[in-house]
Length: 415
Image 1 (cartoon, rainbow, N blue to C red):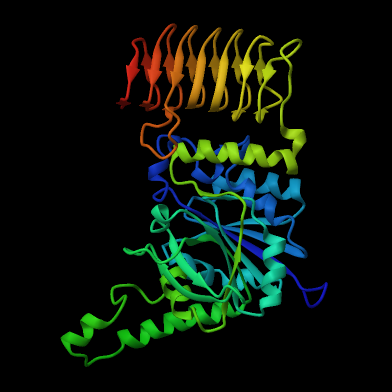
Image 2: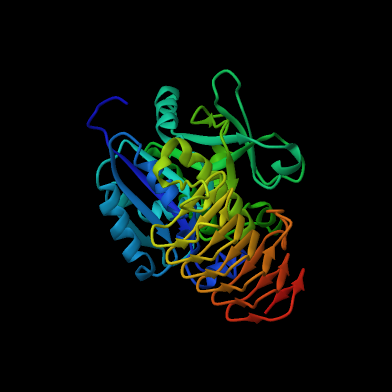
């Protein structure tokens, strides 16, 4: 960067209660961004990655949740990281670009030279300092984090083409019907403040179109986005697509893991990805045990300090155990998230599952699934305060809160 005094701010889009419907029943109890992955709230992972950005002045969380839902978390994470974190509530949808523009005065308070924009439901290693370094070298308005995926999956995301020599963004299209490229937009960006001028340009253009009094019906049909309000600006369609090929936008490719956290099943996969990353970034958070004085731990496992795990239990790989959980003798846990205040009794088995707050799993019971993170019933999910009685088997099912199961179920959604 040009000067050590230049400041950077980060903005993390966290969505809102109407956006997390695919995350039910888990989002019935807690805002999706605060759902724990690898023992930490989902939003904690991008926030802690931002801490590595040089000259970071401020982190903003932007969303539709009520401010009170984030007050405690924002206070604690600010103290923990010693970086100011602030929650900004959107009163109405403005789109990803419009949401950024809506809070431009606050974002520019510290006169930052660069602004990071991240989406909360992205799971990756967040190579933010490396992105910033590349962005400064490119000299453009913005740099997009990109990843290579299989051609079969590419059309679920924004596909792009960049110059292999300069990394300039040449073409961008959001969820195309026909295949364009294996490289996709990861939902992580760094911009100069010029991004606000670009967003304002889209709004002004919309207002001008709206003010055209005499226009033929044929021309009206040709006007793109004619139903969108002027202050609703989508970063992908309204900014990235039109500016591609104009030497303003560039790409930075990550060769590391990348996933989008849209469903409970994907949250279990991403919890495992973050646990494996802890080996390098936070090894002190990973549990260990050889089955003598403490439980046998296999692979990457997080156990909250307040949890009580019997020494004869076998835990892992990919297990996250939250606060005040009790695990009985002989219990076996593989590939699961166990939330606060859960009791798993003697010789119970939990595989490919998420066990909701205050639930209990009886003796010799099994709660399991096939482990297909993308399938609707590929991970078994128990909502809050679900009781599974002794010797009951629950396979490939979703159970909503406050149910008691005294018979076995398979491939069911229990309302």
